[in-house]
Amino acid sequence: MALFVTAPASAGTTLGASAAEKGRYFGTAVAAYKLSENAYTTILNREFNMVTPENEMKIDATEPQQGRFSYASSEQIVNHARSRGMQVRGHTLAWHGQQPGWMQSMEGTALRTAMLNHITQVATHFKGQIYSWDVVNEAFADGNSGGRRDSNLQRTGNDWIEAAFRAARAADPGAKLCYNDYNTDNWTWAKTQGVYNMVRDFKARGVPIDCVGFQSHFNNDSPYASNYRTTLSSFAALGVDVQITELDIQGASADTYRRVVEDCLAVARCNGITVWGIRDSDSWRASQTPLLFNSNGSKKPAYDAVLAALNNGTTPPTTAPPTSVPPTTAPPTTAPPTTPPPGQGGCTATVTVNQWTGGFVANVRVTAGSSALNGWTVTITLPSGATVTNSWSANSSGTTGTTNWTNVSYNGRVGAGQSTEFGFQGTGTVGSPSPTCAAS
Ligand code: 9MR
Image 1 (spheres, rainbow, N blue to C red):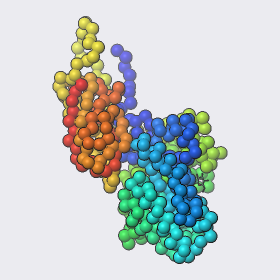
Image 2 (image 1 turned 120 degrees about the vertical axis):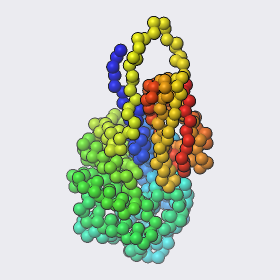
Image 3 (image 1 turned 180 degrees about the horizontal axis):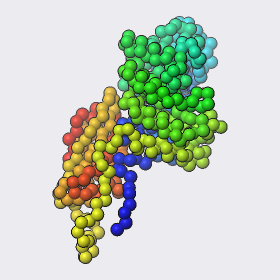
Image 4 (image 1 turned 60 degrees about the vertical axis):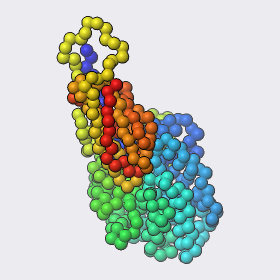
């Protein structure tokens, strides 16, 4: 009998599935005009479960003329993502960059009013479809001041950021609201401390902020530092989620990518990682070859390092990997039936839920009874409002209500008393489901 080692059933084979097993997402920036390119969407649809429009939700794209809103390209991305079970990060509602001409020339009360109207209109338009919004982007200055960046928005008054967050909360109460910036990854940098102090102040005063986005554009001028994990955990300790929102690494060191993933997995409130493009040719810094896929779409060593880090993360699988137990008795001399009979000893299933406001990850453990399983079906009834958006290591019959989950090819065979796992994530509240299991 051949002896071979298989990956544990809990080890995913794509970035999104592997991240989901750790209760996290793996995303990418997406450009609408590339969605007609098959090589691009093949990787996108296979690997990722979170999408950020790279430019299509920026102010110049969504309100090119004052009061005239334009959503064609942003909706194209949102629809592509959500129809395939991917979620969306909205980027961005208020920013000094990529303002349309009419806004660039505004100031004072008129600009403040226009900014708040923009936030209200856009967040309302996409209400219920956005996992998290970058409400305000890049409002702090580089260098040693630790203070705000000068901009027309900043000159409307120092409270412009909290006003933006309040408007976003009112428009879409279900979205997580993030402050997003770059050069805030190194804990010792003044800019990092400036943002930290703002978030601490916002939490103390009840300004509705839920998360901080760390763009994490790492390069020779702004390299990855070993205190990155301290940065993530320090912000999380303020009572906000943290998200890595625009990751790219000059030269795509596999080791540095691995460390970034390990840092996110080590911080419970790190929701997930988004890379800023799929292939090197998609990058805003293409010459630095900073991404996970070569321009021809092949996986780089950094991809393998990220996948391995996601699969061996600091939250180890709760069950031992399924093993192929060699038969203890001699094989039958008669030909075995071509369709194995159902396991006579039945099976049981238990579910472990990680629930947060608006979403959940459920891990299901299937355990064989007194005889081996040749296949299994788990039935889970979801409460109304809970919808499955993504799953791994099982095939499912539906996304709401009573759902049936059957084994995939590699995890149907479970030895007597042994276990295997599958999982799914979704939106809404899943409660404490009581799964039933049937041998097949
Ligand atoms: O990747 C984006 C690029 O296509 C645009 O030309 C550029 C214009 O500002 O914005 C890039 O994305 C930026 C993001 O919106 C905010 N953080 C920095 C990103 C890289 O410049």
